[in-house]
Length: 164
Image (cartoon, rainbow, N blue to C red; front, side, top):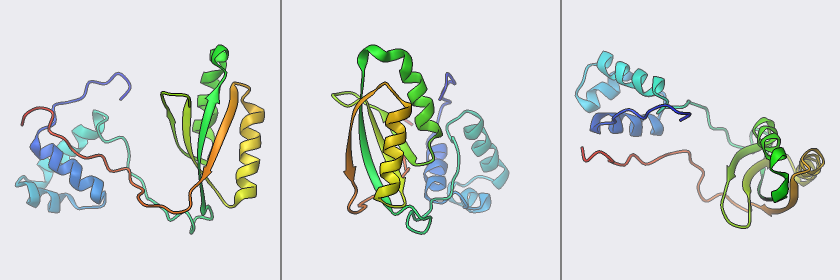
């Protein structure tokens, strides 16, 4: 959330956030009826949550096959520890790479875990070669090809942390 303070989130906000995650196209009037507020009050709450950075974006989720990228690859990157000055460059490279659907810095023997999409294995191989060639800090990487998708979601369960 980039140094922003997280606002107090009450039970109505949690209900709204849950509903919006399930369907970002839901009408404010429908949400208002669910929570017992006016549509304008719901709209103000949603705007406050957006402005505070609780809602970070809204997107359309595509079927990867229909988009021409049916191959999903899980990639584990191991970095050269003494090359920390190059890590920021790698992070920028990963964020900019269209093929990288998700990237996490992690603990353990692996430093980063990526989810990469590709049209086919040859496309993935070109991506992997380019990644290695352009990022000297990568010591080693492991690849796992996803055989099937059991779950794919950005849904974050709303937990009551305030006792509300």
